[in-house]
Image 1 (cartoon, rainbow, N blue to C red):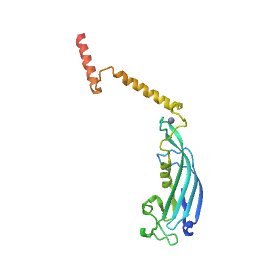
Image 2: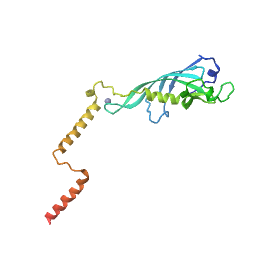
Image 3: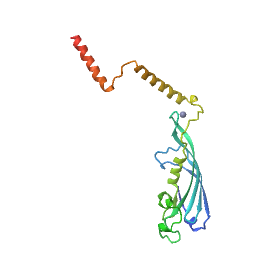
Image 4: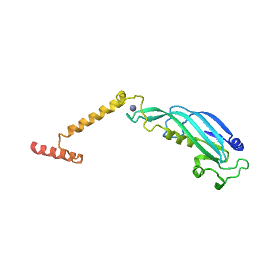
Length: 196
Ligand SMILES: [Zn+2]
């Protein structure tokens, strides 16, 4: 997702470019499972310090349901607005000194926001971060009520069963599992003695 902004940088402040994107996100982030291409609009605006990139994109990603923990498809609207700064002066190719930069300090230090010496502006890292930020906090499967979700019902009944197992154990004196094997040995040797 790279854009050559050499021409835009030569234009006056306020000049814009608009791009319609339809991108395959394979390889963007190994942790991110995109189930659809990313689609949306990127606008690049020439500012006094560089280029302001504004993006609004839709993508479907795989997440785990916060209730039943099953994988689901979550719609994400990734939105960002970031200032990218040129590493070099477009007309001369001269590297710009940090104190010549007129934007915010954090924009100066963030390598994801640098327009390289070939005047390439790469939105990949900004986009990757914005997808993570715009993901739902607690994704849900499409069932409105927990009792409608078959996966949740299954999980609940599994929990009930393990609760019952625990309740059954309460009838027996508690045995430290580390002693259980020794107790079994002791019992066996006692039985052997009786049999002799
Ligand atoms: Zn669910």
